[in-house]
Length: 255
Image (cartoon, rainbow, N blue to C red; front, side):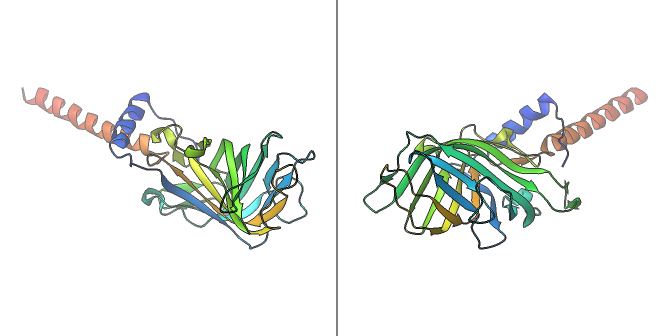
């Protein structure tokens, strides 16, 4: 989808409209699932036994971030036509060596301090779905993040950015306009299933290396709008201006 340029006045109007509808809590607006049940995430402990790297893979032997075929969906009603889209998911993150894993009372292991980026790129054919025109290679959703946590017990867990844990994320998209989202409210959770080997820590207390499988979801405070929303408002405003102009001409003609 091609980026659209909007006027500042329209952006102000759009912001004021959405502000009245901001929910009291973050709402999930998008999600994805891998196309297979094989490993699509990998955590590799650092060479010094502290910190490590977390990245997307297509198999257990991959040693660097790979693009994974997934099905991506926007789940806000405004975007309900955009579901089960073919996309390529990539994530690449690292944790500094001074970040340690800890075990809680329930046997939950935690590796904090991951910083990195992710992307979901449309890899289907050029097509129009409802009011949306998609182009191969389009940025459905991408972002940068800091202080993500890996948490889990046994063979299940998640890699997440939550505000309560001090995490932060910034999203971009050619489909969604994030100008109406409350800054600093972006969160996500990537599900870790079939973790192998199960969660545990090495003697230096970083998480042991593992592979896992799962999808994820994304949330924010304030409902994102389509990238065309600003132009829709401009269109309505232009129609009103045209009607007012016609009325003035009619008044002059009859005077």
